[in-house]
Each structure stands twice: as C-alpha cells, then as structure tokens.
Length: 257
Image (cartoon, rainbow, N blue to C red):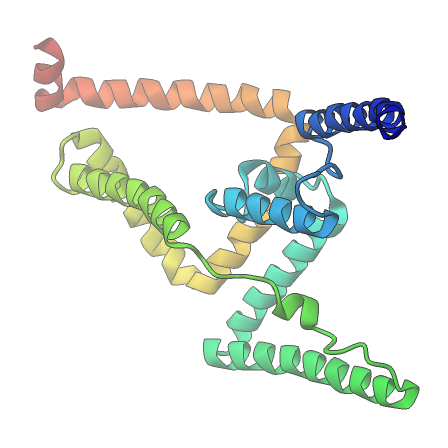
C-alpha cells in the first residue's frame, strides 16, 4: 500500500522537478534581469549592481565628448547653450571689472548662500511637519566622485600626447626647421603686439567666446558662400608663399635636391 502511494506521488514530484529545471535553466540562459534562482531577489539585484559597477568603473568617464561640444557651439539645444554662453560671459565680464580673488569669493559666497538657505528651509519644514526626510543633499553627498588611478593615468597619457606635440612644434619653429613657418610665426607675433596694445587678455577671451558661439552657426548657414571666398584667399596666399620660397636661396636649393 505504501509502495503504491509512493508510486502515485513520484510522477508528480518528478514532473514538478523537471518543470523547475527548465525554468531555472531558461532564466539563467535568457539573462532576464529578474531571474536568479540560486540567489534571492535582493541578493541577485545587489550582485548584478556590484558587477555592473565593477565593470563600468574600469572605463574612464569622459566629461565632455566631441559630439557634446559640437552640439553646444552649434546651438542644437538652445537652453543648454544659452546657459553655458551666458554663464561664461558673465564670468568673463566680472573678471574684466574685478580681480580674480573677488570674483571667486563672490561666487563661493553666492553658492553657499543658496545651499545654506535651502538646508535651513528644509530643516524648518521637516520640524513643522514632523517628517524624517533626512538631509536634502543626501543623494549628492552619497555620489562617489573619486577618480581612480587608472582613469587618472589615462587622462595624463592623453594630455602628454598633446604636450609632446606642442613641444616638438615649438622646437621646430624656434630652431627654424622651416624658414617660412618661422617667418609666419614672427609676422603673427608682430601683429599680436598691436592687438595687445589695444586689448587685454580678458577682452580677447570675451571676443573669443563670442566668436566660438557665433561663427560656427553662421558658417553652417552660409557654408557655400564662405567656402568660395576662403578658397580664393587660400589660393592667393599659396601663390604668394610659393613666390617667396622661390626667391629664398635655401628653400630653392632644398626643393632642387
């Protein structure tokens, strides 16, 4: 009697166990986010989050990409570009009117005034409503902003590439590897003496910002006409440079060789 009851129970047990195995295998093979049979839902979520953080922390995070800068100067998002343009312009105008120490001090005081006022306001609201929302900036205080050594070395290696190129260019220009390029630098510096007599550094930065946020959008709108006139100017400049190189004995001899 016991054997018959065990025999009648065994098909159901075997069928339930066989049904559980495919589901477990299917959940593991399908890679669905909620399926983690060996671990609980909480353990699975924490393990998946830890694996994601460990895999993403090894990759250096770029603050600004090329596409973001392109969209910024071409006014793809008017609100974002307007905010960046207005903030930097106000900063440069403040530096033109006041000293760097005064501008930095006023900026820090303004930021502290906003954060302290908001902190006190939320504390009073929590005391009146008898709520326990906690610190209003807790989400930002818990953000991990540490820079890993790997990311730091990656940034330094990228910076060293540009530094080495700049040093090589400086040596090539000042030691007159190419006479025409060195003469171009001399003429440019001579013109900059007149610019420096009229404008100071902050004024030049303000003009540079105005050009950066205006020239690209104008060029995009009138690209055909601008390319036509730039091509004419480039051809004339090239012909003048070729005439100068032909009259210089060192350059002519080098070309003949």
